[in-house]
Length: 341
Image 1 (cartoon, one colour):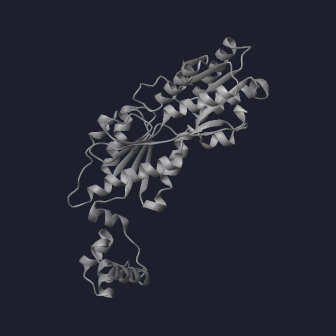
Image 2: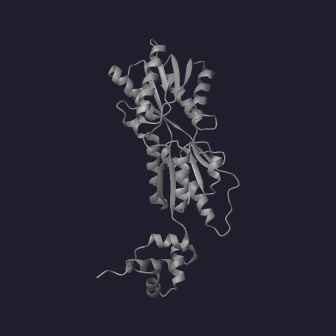
Image 3: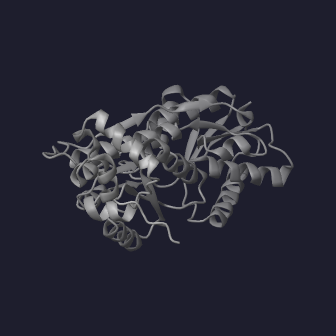
């Protein structure tokens, strides 16, 4: 015989409360006394109540779902950040729908429309494709991470300090030339700070340096090809020099390291490498990579908390929207490993 699902009417009959009070317990528990909350909670356990999430969503319109849009999953930074974002479920109870945008604006707009159709309560955006102005026009709580953020709330790393830290450690390693390779970012993208910080340190301290702007491509295979070309260019220009190379992230630093090991069977003493992010690949590389560590766990935590601040404000009877976007900036931490020793 099929077991009957326990309903609000069953709980009301068992506890002696009205169905309205039972509904308030699920949708606004603070509106009833702690004593009555405990009575209802005990009843749910005794009756073996199984919550119908779909019915609850239909009743109050709150899905407890957050959308996440990332550029891709092959970059270790994004996969590590996503892991930390998802792990906040245990603390906050929000679930996540994830899309990889692959730098296609129209596709990302379709993703957002899909998320809105599912009554997603907020968005966390790591993709650079859509401007913050366009994102703000969706009128939904949004937090961005490490991207242009003029019109929306954000959590970023102090990339300028990170660039200075990378240049400092390479300078202390006794390099003759310091090189930073990166993409061609506009100045309003946080990652541009890595270029500026690196360059300012070198100029201020009289170190010979170069900034090599490159399009590394949109896949792991393209990255491999372009970084192999980068290494060849550096070797041709500085064959007799001790070279310090600051790569834009740990994934690219690891590819460069692998290129050198395939060619020489080791990391030549005259090369020093620094990555950025402190993603798992920097620790697990065949030679652990010195990196400027973003506090990825804290960034994920701050991003979710900042998003919930906006979501919870909307649930109030008289919500007060933010007067201006909130921007949080975390300090990077230099982590020295084998590639600069």
